[in-house]
Amino acid sequence: MHTFSFIGPLLSGLFLSCRASASDPHKYIPPTASDSRSPCPGLNALANQGYIPRDGRNIDPAQLKEAMIEVMNLQIEPFDSEIQVTLDHSTTGNSSTFNLEDSNVHNNIEIDGSLSRKDLYFGDNIHFDQAIWDQSSSKFEGDIITIRTAAESRAYRTMMAEKVNPNFTANPFIAGLAPAIYMLVFGGVNATETQRDWIESFFRDRLPTHLGWTKSPVELTKINLFAMSSTIAAVPVATAMP
Image (tube, rainbow, N blue to C red; front, side, top):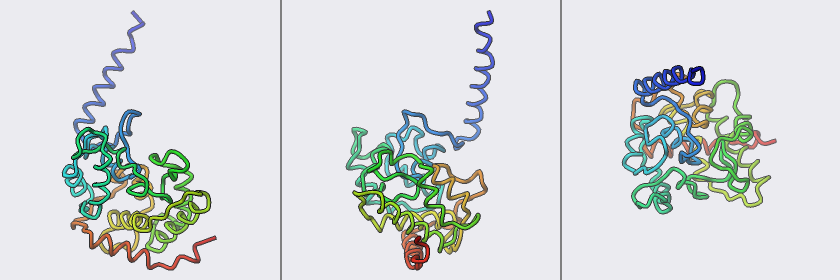
């Protein structure tokens, strides 16, 4: 009789979990081992919070576009070529859909010198890596990330990756977009700074809504993104190097 005494509490816990999930369809839930994930924290965050399929499978570009507008108010058009490469490597059996892991094409969305992932040369380039993030975030000052420290972080991480990866391949365009995306999405069109904890949450594959972030009230366009990227690229970073 006592053998089954755990069933009641277990079922009760499951019921409460399901009820909480139903009341908040975008609750953060970490992926399971069988879920498909990408080297891109933004895509992973959308899946972890149910804006695209939580298992990361059979996603179509229209679905992704809708999710990015709903969640970040960010147009998907700047990433059309990266999405097409992902579709070209689709493993879904349908060339118009993809699994998140299909985006793991070297030098496409995944690049050497990632701000939060290992380079492909060292193995796992999909999951958040604390040591890599410690490198990238070492250039931040306090709780705020500015345009200057975002630029210094990007330059420092690239330099450190080049030092240790004999197969390092530079991709300045995608590398420059990473800080531009987080400054724009989490700071706004005319951002000069953003909150460090928001950005760390994002790179850990979780939207920082639980920390108080809300999306931009205006749609963020390719023009906004490239302007932010140019602003960051114009920052002199020589003094940030050891």
